[in-house]
Length: 50
Picture 1 (cartoon, one colour):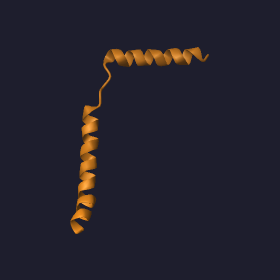
Picture 2 (cartoon, helix red, strand yellow):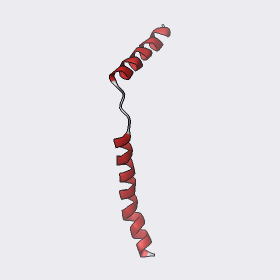
Picture 3 (cartoon, one colour):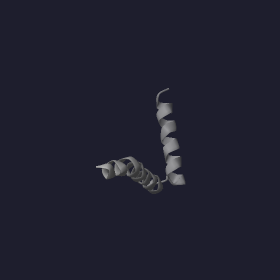
Picture 4 (cartoon, one colour):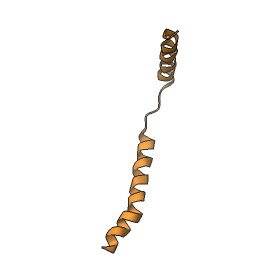
């Protein structure tokens, strides 16, 4: 039973950290063209509210 708690208390955060690190590394970045299109779409939305 002590081994189970050891695994949960010490192994859990390590596994969680590894999953978070993997997710951050695999996150897709926007290209310059996509960034520009996003900015332009935002400008259009704000202009349409006037």
